[in-house]
Length: 321
Ligand code: MEV
Image (cartoon, rainbow, N blue to C red; front, top):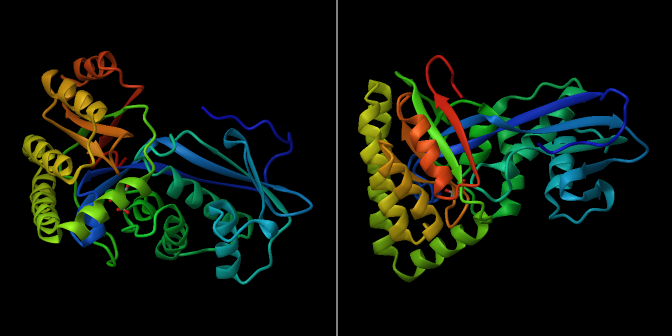
């Protein structure tokens, strides 16, 4: 876990936000198809606010200290602070905002969005201000645009709403019923993969052959619709083949990688009901659908196949994370 080595005084305020996984529909969601995502509360980004002479953001683990008034317009930390101040119509406050995160960077788990959301939440708490979730999500979305030019908005939505969402670009997120728990393992290839690069490569492929890519996106959209119906009906077993079919389409888009393929194959061979990459792909994390009975053996197989870290999470009626 990342550590803060700063002041012993208690913070004025704190904020936090979870990581996220995309269950179905990444990349196609940028082009208007539906996607399903869920928060991962086992890993979180946190922000703490201390009184100071000027407004700074410090990310100790990233070795970054940003003085907000002097930071360039495209600095994500400074952008989030400025956006919150503009929304509340207040000047930059004399605060030291200290950011820590357990969410690996460039790993498909929404670390950028979670850090922005944590900064926003801490600032709102320090100002004793209320802001609707839709508005906070919209501010985080503005920062997401700095990370890659054409975000769908799914990452900011799921980390701010902190519940499973059915997401279509440009529309408010739809919460939906998860009839039975969905047990997942999340395994990290350990290979950082900035979203911007994978999204840019898919964009170039789409520009070169729009008909082929649109057909792939349509199939992914159909899979997301079938998955929603299965989740609402509690037909968890049906999700496995849908995850495998989604993974095959992501591979055709060119966003899988040998390391992801190795983990996905290892999970399937060890008894996972289905497996796919989650997020932008190329590196980062994959997810495997397991049962309580198969979770341990699949986790062991993922570690044997060189997973850097294996997390276990459950999306379900009793535990929405
Ligand atoms: C990244 O978590 C998901 C992508 O679909 C990009 C986006 O939706 O903005 C790859």
